[in-house]
Structure formats: structure tokens, C-alpha cells
Image (cartoon, rainbow, N blue to C red; front, side, top):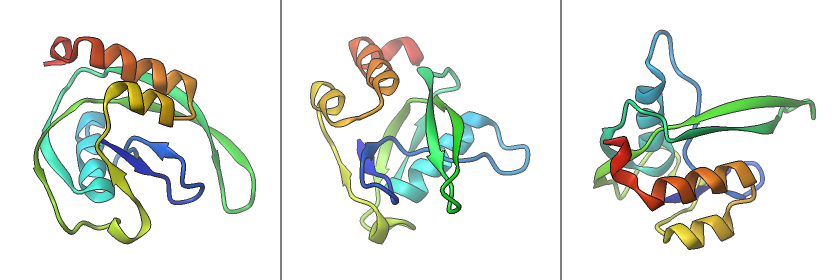
Length: 120
């Protein structure tokens, strides 16, 4: 599943910041719930990582590293926290690669989709 970013509307994966001492994989699962209404079992093995430039309100760009954790989706909510500020869409891996602007994230999606069971 891809979602739109709130600032530019580009297609991305749910991502965010860990809270307190929250494990990174659990933060990824929580963000998938908040940003896309997804619930399920998250892998403790990352599928990959990439960098992107986050634009702050001041206009300053800050490099951010994103660790990607696969989520086996069990439930898809009709209503969720960020529903009004994002669009979500289920797509094939090849369509996702065409829709995503970050080349490193495209590589992670393609690698994961080639054999998703390696992260179980």
C-alpha cells in the first residue's frame, strides 16, 4: 500500500518517528495505523533503508534516514487518524516502483516484492 505525503502529495510508504523507547519496527507499525489505517504483524527485520530530504516549515531541508519494515496487514480501517490528509492505494510492486519518486525506496520495494518471505 502506498499513501500520499501530506506536504507534496507524492506517493510514499507510511513512516515516522519512534516515541520514547519504542522499537523502530513498532514505530513503523504504529505509523502505518495512523497514516494509512493498517493493522497487522510487523517484521523485526528491516527490508532496507533510504535517505530523503525532509523540508521543515522554515524551508530548511534536513536529511532523514528511513528504515523500512514489512507489515503483514490483517485489518484495514475505514476511518483512521490521517484519513482526511492522505490518500491510500493498493498497487502492484511494479506500479509502486513507477509511482514512487525516491530511487532508493523503489529498489527496496522491488527487492522486497521479489521474495517477501525472507522477512518473516
